[in-house]
Image (cartoon, rainbow, N blue to C red; front, side):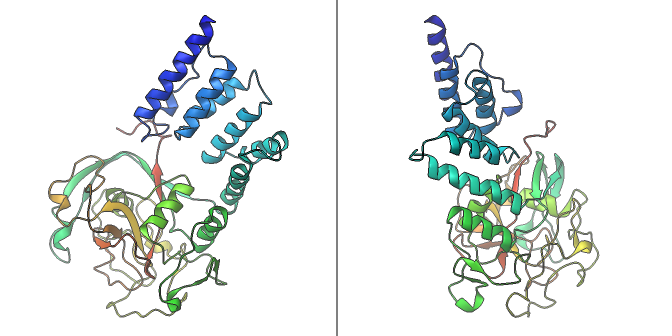
Length: 373
């Protein structure tokens, strides 16, 4: 009886601790060990609460420990499938299939698990390529020449390590997201600017960047693939590196083999042909190997916009103002001139806007990189 009480005490303490810091799921995942002296039943309760809080790595640790005693427990198998799916582990599909055989047909979680099964398929069909941007300092912003007032002052910023998407999100990837989750399809209020018909994309646009998506759409997609939108500082470091370059490729002028841009902001929309494939410009890659961070489509970032933010922004891991009237977009688009596609250039857009010149690039925390100091 004493062991049972002690186990429940630890369950309670872990739940409280997790709730107190639920904004940072799995932040201590590398240091987490299964709580000793818990019964398998108490460990199942603990695992369920960790999963509910988004602490999938920690939850999976407790699940695997409990399954040593209860290898075919339906609840544990379900929790295992959830954790493996959210962590994008290869075993997820097999685990969910096993749970579907174990669980009654009328189980209340069956629909949710089938949705997770679809998600495991999506991760195979639409792989996400991530590039590591190591921890360290870089110079953010620009002054003089073509720089706008909101790009200054130049200032040093330290960022922890993170991952950035190698490519802009494609229509094919977003189509899988829409089909798997029921999220609304991309669309423009003027039908002539839409390259989807309902929730189906037009033929031949799979490798083009998704457009006509709002900031909220971008947030939802990045969360679905296990990431988030990059902060403005992260985006700029990923684009220009640590040597203060003007463009992702360096300081050489913008050319047609480096970027999909407009010489004088006079390019007109000509349908899908206006856009470039997300892997098209090898000569335009960033210092870290990311494609098309200049031109093609503007990319939503996490931050609210404030033209004076750089004057007092934090020197470490800035995340933007706490509020604002618009969200920042970065990188320029197919209709932008050479000055606009500079890596330091900033622009803003209402978060609900869905435009033919705005798309998505995701980022995610580098929780697997220990040295982020």
